[in-house]
Image (cartoon, rainbow, N blue to C red; front, side, top):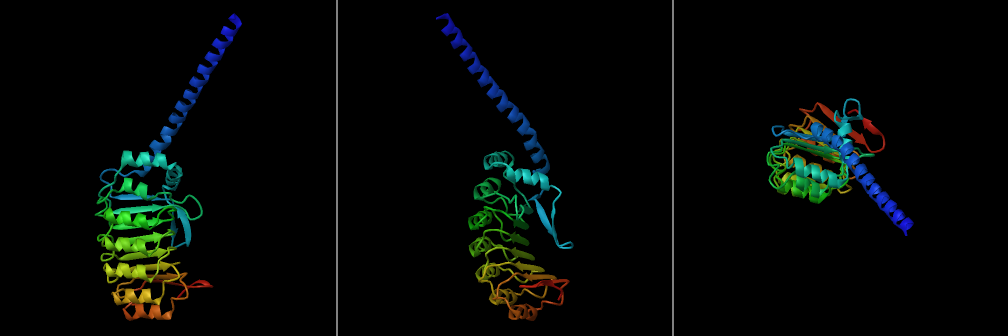
Length: 288
């Protein structure tokens, strides 16, 4: 009987020891994790007076024709690799962000894509929070689809936007339509659409919102099969041409021919050009 009691006491003590051990491990884990979060917030989260938020891993250097890491690339990678649950805690603690003039979000094409989705955008930028936004750049976001752009439109991303850069996203014309319905178009001076499923209809939506006359930079690359000369004609008829200083047409399908380029030329494209890049479908880039 005494032996059984001793065995029971030892087992009970071992059990408590394991519980304490587990608690210590969890505590150590929290301690190790805390500096990692703090270092991210110090480097990436804007102050109350900062009007720029840039969480981008890499950017394309047009001089070297190569992708290069941004100065904060390592910190952004760590941010994107956090579980969504932890990121949401960060958004609720530090957000929402107001008064932004420039918003840039991006990952890498091959790996470490930005995982933000609609739910996270809603936490970061509630309705009306982006009314002052001038520049929107989103590239290589794995979960950004048309509903995400619809939310950004309700958040205020619209008539004040002068630069719109959408690249390597799972988008259709309806995403652009949502932005256009929010007023995005009439103030645009830079339009960069690359590796997105946009057709002539998407361009028509932006033109109806006023896009065209103020454009100084137009970059259309790797668009959907339904993008054609008609889309370029729509832009030209809206006044896109005379102010263009930079024009890139690349990796476009058979629907884009010399006729589309002639439309831009007739609208005045050429007199102000300082950068022109046309990509032949099979032979890469060539000077023009």
